[in-house]
Image (cartoon, rainbow, N blue to C red):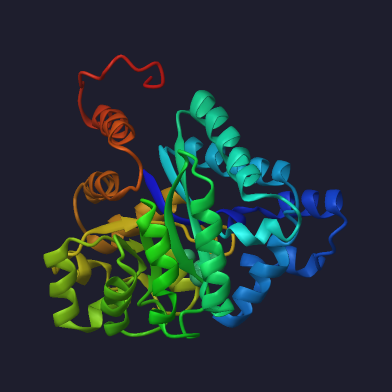
Length: 332
Ligand code: ADE
Ligand code: ZN
């Protein structure tokens, strides 16, 4: 299982938030921590709750712990690879240079790979509702320090704010330095915005993109161009995009020829994990071996290097048959 859409700071369970809040002297309302999914009511409230709860992460050590915790717990459910989104300026504000943020996540990765056989990469992100100037800043920070763990550039936040074209320059800078691009689109706005984001930002993948299902022309374009959609079922249901799994368009998207990969988005906020997303997808697709097909597509769609993809293919091939793996001590 691969988790290709997860906000690193959005992975914290209540105990971790409490621990970091105490360590860093940040106050978080106990009621919020105790509420199911942290108790928000719509997307705007979700973003507020997210900002409040994630403010407990202050240092590079905090970031390393949060990344390691998520990798360890995902691996315990069978995950092998995660791509984390993180906005560089968030921890710059608390005095952690981006270089140190990347080193912290690299350290978590090394430990998780050695102890639990799970790998990860990073996607630096800009936050759409903060506007194009901070996005440019985020792109410049991302490309200033290269680290093998950093493979992508993304756009998160409220897609209802600012025209997508206003972020084109930030994405141009990131892509010109070899980062692959993804952006949240077609989650809160309609099908045409998916195409617009792909065209204006040069996307390799789309975050969510599920509302593409509302247009035959957009579906055809996604299928023809083989652009994967990072579908996050629990997130879509929690945020009220669809009433229930039967109403979710994942099956329609797949049957139209779109490539589907899965993500958890902000797992405790949406009361999920990657195993839960795979089982929901299998149920919704009503497809024998859906998990296998999604994993194959996810390995192709991952932003990592070919050697890592080969290792993942090898690990997952062992799920179904004896397979001649390269001599890799991490494959057990
Ligand atoms: N930032 C953190 N989580 C997010 C989400 N689910 N959608 C958009 N922006 C986010
Ligand atoms: Zn997201």
